[in-house]
Image (cartoon, rainbow, N blue to C red; front, side):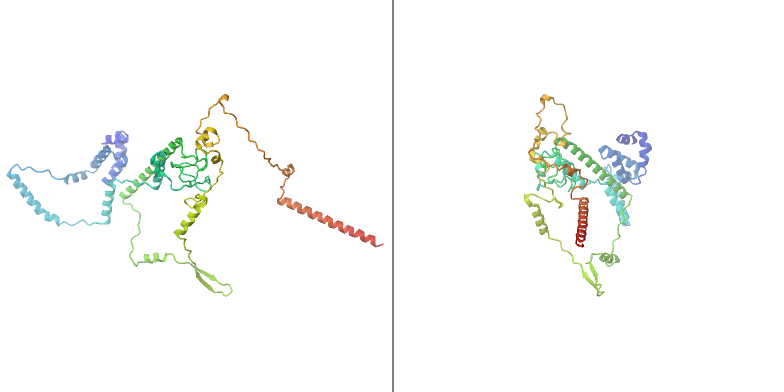
Length: 434
């Protein structure tokens, strides 16, 4: 037995006998031992055979009970004595049957019922349903696995298209792919279709689909790893739940209450009541009570009308699925204007896309094979250059310090003017006195 168990676990017979078997002997019920062995060695035909052998050797009373419940083999009547013996035994069995019918019925209690249900659930295998995260990964995997030019891709055809150039400033970053491979644009989660869809299109360079064959393999491998981790976590939680079920460790649940009890009164008292506002008049010292009016929620038709009106502005959808504003920029970074077909971006300008540097290996090109150099950019528009004296000023014109200096100079000038007027008045008066 230890040798067969060691062959499945990859351990020698001595290690299994000293470490594995003593721990298996601590299980008190065949259901718990069978569940642990299934989780340990798997559910293959060979593993199931070893599991049943070990359970029968650990709990032999289960084997005897099962063997006694099997039907007896048919008898052969060789002589008249055998017939009489069979008749007498049949009569004895009939006489004993009423005695067994008057036996006391087994009294059921919650503990027995719970144990029976737990044993039934432990023996029946369960197919765990996928979680929400698993379904999202499966959907992304299906989108990446399908060929965009095949008829199977029509399943993922978008019903609505949303374009946003916020580059992650307004919305969260897109899942599984956050940069456009062609132009390096940062993709947000408000884009529809999603970047991994076979119908995806970059809002800047119009590359469709956004995922290239080189990146598709990496994303699929990442999705498979995440899916396996989620499945392992789900199985581990199921094992822990079954262990708690086997040990009868249930979470405490509130005891059901009858009608008219104090629990109903407390429940009714916690119901939401209309708010009351108290106002105190400071002149008359009287208190007035007013009830706050509940604002009625807008109807669904009104909301749909508002959303439809906002989405149909200028013939393009302007709001995301969560109601946030989409950012539209027709001049974004020049790729839409200069590169109408993204397939020729790397051939003509391989360095204008930073994301494309990792996809194109660098190699030396002979001078004779190099393309002609581009003409320098020229413009007839004269650039306005500020005066050097203005640039050398410590305080720019229009600042608070400049305004204070002007006010101070104006006050000094007005004071000097008043002093000159007083002096001129005294001198004219002295000339009149003689």
